[in-house]
Amino acid sequence: MDSLKPLLDEIVADLRARTDKGRVADYIPQLAKVSADKFAIAVAPLSGPVVTAGDADEPFSIQSISKLFTLTLALGQIGDRVWDRVGREPSGNAFNSIVQLEHEQGRPRNPFVNAGAIAVTDIILGGHRPKEAIGEILRFVRFLANDDAINIDRLVAQSEQAHGDRNMALAHFMRSFGVIQHPPAEVLGVYFHQCAIAMNCRQLAQAGLFLAANGRNPLTGFNVVSSPRARRINALMMTCGHYDGAGDFAFRVGLPGKSGVGGGILAIVPNRAVVAVWAPGLDANGNSLLGTAALELLVQRTGWSVF
Ligand code: DON
Image (tube, rainbow, N blue to C red; front, side, top):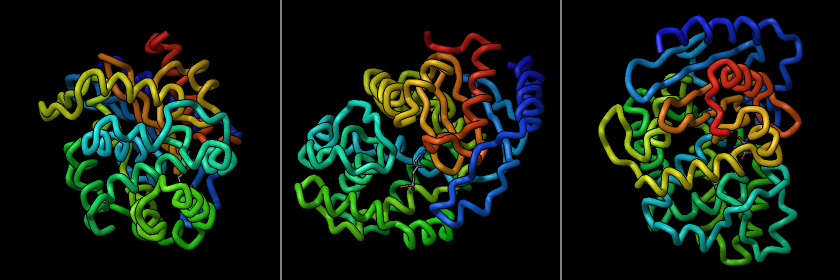
């Protein structure tokens, strides 16, 4: 992997020079303060040190990438009963869309659109108090990344809470169908905090390693999930991880990936490595514009696509 460093430096130089950086998310005001000039990439191989370039040690808001970790946690808690509450099909709609819920008995299409992720958080809430559920999610992410220095950015959580009408509407709508069992304010309190987890690219790449290694985290030796479950989570990332941009991401990058409106993308190269990128400017679907371009370049140069 030593030969990767010059390639990552090249990718950073190429992308930093681009003038169209996309638009930083502003519907969560605290995120709008982040500079569109930030750029980072980290590659965690299955063995050996993480290779990085750019601002890879600077934490950013993982936002919807957290949905991957909460899905894994919920599957660990109640197994395949998760699929009684949430589907496994791409939505072809925006991440925060409500339209399909009305025609589909309030059951979200998949665990990565906001509605689906809120339903997954409702599962994790279980019989806990919201604070306990937040603690459990944070501990799980630290365990996956093998790094206790990961924290929640409370200003981001508060900022989203103050502008969370759309998510609140999704939660109330689902509760009217019995898909959500807890009071929406409690579920959303947990959801906003999971989205506000701040990680750098190095930590994020490490947290994804279990998905590249058939469910076993090579850093710690722990079996996080079974091999079939890792395969299925990867399949969901490929088909649903980028919302209505999932097809384009598969076409251009060809890796299971999960994006967040903080500008991060976590991409899995099965049996080889995990790549985390961060570029805060987004495309029209709410996915990182330059992050996707960076992954496209990396895959072109390494041949790492699964196709
Ligand atoms: O619920 C929201 O709108 C945000 N906390 C997360 C959305 C998100 O990251 C969508 N991904 N690209």
